[in-house]
Length: 187
Image (cartoon, rainbow, N blue to C red; front, top):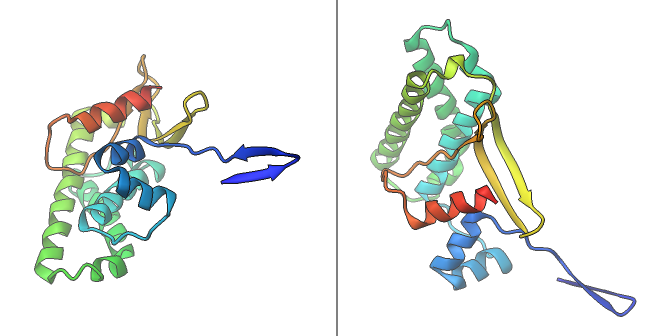
């Protein structure tokens, strides 16, 4: 976008995220349509599920659930599942627009709940209750490169700081997209 004032053309800065860059490298036309033209995109089960899981984990930290060390593990599991179910319910309208069967939606809900329990198991195994408060959902900017990155979790008590990005993919492979994302985050 240009703003002409006093004969100068001022271009609007366009911040790019790792996801936007990866999308451009996969399909420049799709990037153009979504980021430049702002065309509406159909929701997908993977996007809805990913957002619900991320928001549930964010609430786990923002609501300081991770400080409930004295809570029974079974109660903690129910609490984590409840955080997810609340987020899933928030997306009811988008989920119904997917034209999926109830069984298909139930499968994705169940599979996402397993992800939440895996997150909790990792948290407990890594002694998360004993660690200092993390920084959660922090957006960082590189003014030099016009990059922004939304970081899921930063543990500042470790040097160098430990950055965690929660993935909802079934694959454990560290793909070129993930490597690029982490490289951009380090900038």
